[in-house]
Length: 164
Image (tube, rainbow, N blue to C red; front, side, top):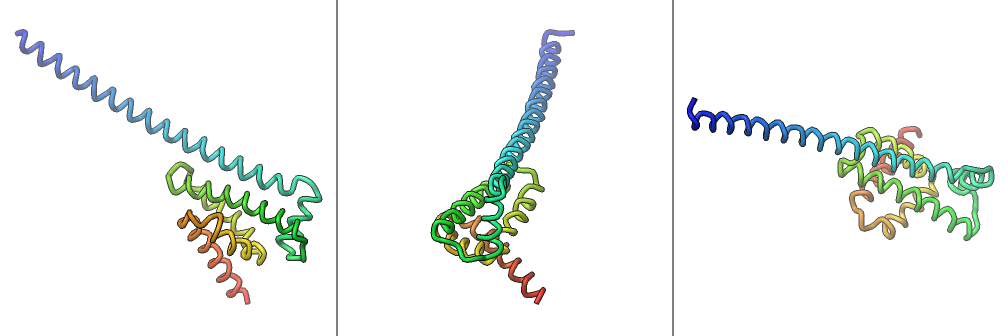
C-alpha cells in the first residue's frame, strides 16, 4: 500500500467521522427543540392554570366572577375595574399561548385547548363587550391575535344563531 493510498483511506474515514458527528449534532438539536417545546408548553399551561385557579380560589372570588361575567348582573365601577384586570390578565396569557403556538414553540394540542378556555370568557355578553374595547387598545398591536379572538367570537355568535 502506497502512502497516497493510505492518505485517501484516511480522508475517507475522516469524511465518515464528520458525517457521523454532524448527524449526532442534528439529532441533539432536534431533541433540544423538543425539550424546549415541552418546557414552554408546561410553563404556559402552568401560568394559565394558576391564573384560572386564582380567580376561583375562594368563594368570594368565584361568586364575583360568576356574578360579574357570566350572570351579567349590574356591577359597580370598582368591580368593572376588577373584572377588566382579570380579563386582561387572562387574555395576556391567551395571547402568549397563541404567539408561542404560531412560533412552533408549543405542542400542537395546546393552543386549541387554550382557545376553548378563551371562548368560555367570550360567551358572556360582558366578555364580548370587554373584548370590543380591549382589541382596540391593549391588544391592537398584535393583529394576528386580535383576528384569532374575533374569529372565536364569530364562531360563538354563529352557534348562538343556530341554537335559536
